[in-house]
Amino acid sequence: MILHLILAALALLSLAITLWQWLAARRFPLHQRAADISFAPGVTLLKPLKGLDPETRGCLESWFKQDYRGPVQLLFGVAAADDPVCELVRKLIAEHPQANTQLVLCPEQLGPNAKVSTLVHLERLAQHDHLVVSDADTRVPPDFLAQILQPLRDPQAGLVNCFYALTNPTTLAMQWEAVAVNADFWSQVLQSRTLKPLDFALGAVMATRRQQLNEIGGFRALVDYLADDYQLGNQIAKRGYRIELCPVVVECREREQGWREVWAHQLRWARTIRVCQPVPYFFSILSNATLWPLVWLLASNVQFHRSFPTYPDSPETRTGAFLVLATFFLFTFGLVLRSHSSRKLLEALTQATVPPGWDGSTTLKDLLQVPIWALAFLGNTVVWRGQRLRVLPGGKLIPASAG
Image (tube, rainbow, N blue to C red; front, side, top):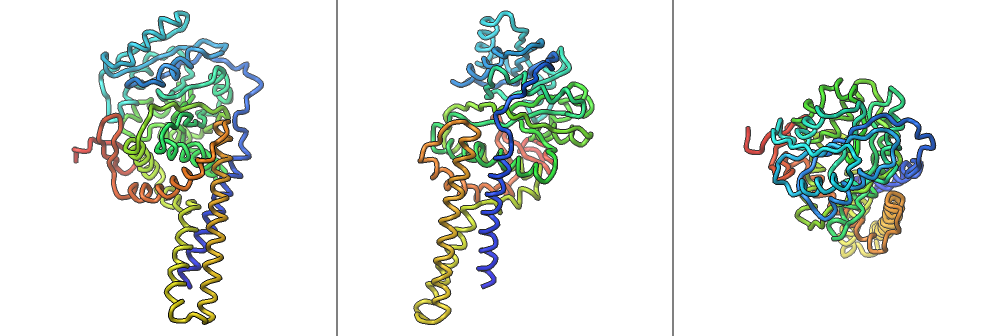
């Protein structure tokens, strides 16, 4: 009986957390634009690149097409001169001769985080005090720079970031990841913000000032960390500045990926979050609104079938039958609530209608979250940009073969 009470409490708690996340997301002014965009300081975009896929051109070209009143400098950094992305960048530069753009070769790797190593090189060439850092697979709307920089007119705003949506999930594995990002991740961030101000950053696009960057020691201070975006926001927040969320959503466009690639990415992401926030990540399993009602339902059925042959007409058996019906009702209600809230969150972020088949992807995501959550605690190695690395307590990286 005690076990049933515990499982019932966990099932109800998971549903309450799901509802909390949904309500927190509904209150956020997603996709809204600031009316006053008169603040237009000079800005430098720092864009580390590696490799080329069918989505790269559209992502990079979106930065050349910004409708922004102030001066813009675009710095694209690559580690190797033979990287195929170099040819594309040169073509884009030739197609937009009016843009202040430079392709920068950054061969010296200053630490295990190759992306941040490139940012260190690009930082030295920045002409402006307002800096925007963006991942290679990010595509932005034409008014994005004008919108994301507006909060920085307040000196107490230290960094501005935004939510991102995976907008081209072409395989079942990518649909699983899209549920994790387009429904769960952004609503969990907003849920966290109802408890305390943000003290981390989301890495798709981040805008800050040279002043804040210098105060934390520049990008060089982050070159040994896996979660450089988390560390950048966290270190700026520790110095008393606010981390702001811009309501404009950007797109992350990925090449087609199968189960092996998506699994490796999700595991790296899980271990990254676990290292950065171990206690919140440990308790994150409580929000799984498919797992706990299902476990309670299975436990009730097992208990009922064990007692039925021995005591078919006993009060205990009738109580067990009622408990099975109650758990089945709660499980069904949980599936409906989870599917409906997930669908609404997906549609809110992507501004697109979600096909009916996505309900199954939500259930699949919740079930696969269990081994991913467990494996996040059972290992400390990740594969990133072709490197196998070991994550130390606190988030620092070393080669997996070291130590």
